[in-house]
Length: 106
Image (cartoon, rainbow, N blue to C red; front, side, top):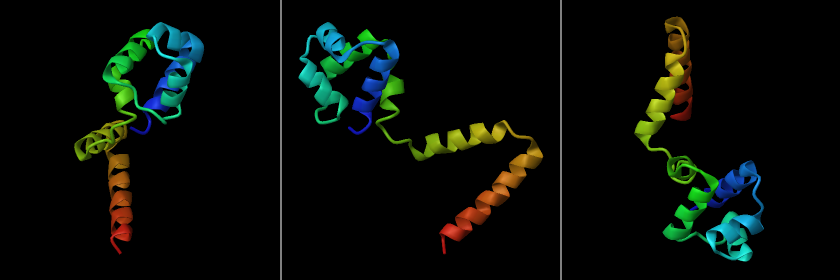
C-alpha cells in the first residue's frame, strides 16, 4: 500500500512526535514503526487505527494518498477547478484540453 507509510510519517512529524514516542503510544516497537513508515511493512487494521487516533489523522485523508482516484473523482476535481474560473476562461481551458487529448491520441 504505497503512500500509507509516508502519510503516517508526515502526520507524525507535523504532530512533533518522535518515532520512539509514537511507537510507545501505539504499543509497537520502534523498528516496526520505522518499517511501516519506510513502507517495508503494512500495519494491521488495529495498528493503523491506533496510529490515526494518536496522530489525530482522518482515515480518509491518509487513504486518499494510498487509493488512486477513480474516474469520477478525477472528473469532480476538474469540475471544481473549472468552477473557479469565469465562463470565458472555462471555454479556453476546455479548448486546450481538446488539443491535448487530440495530441495524445496520435
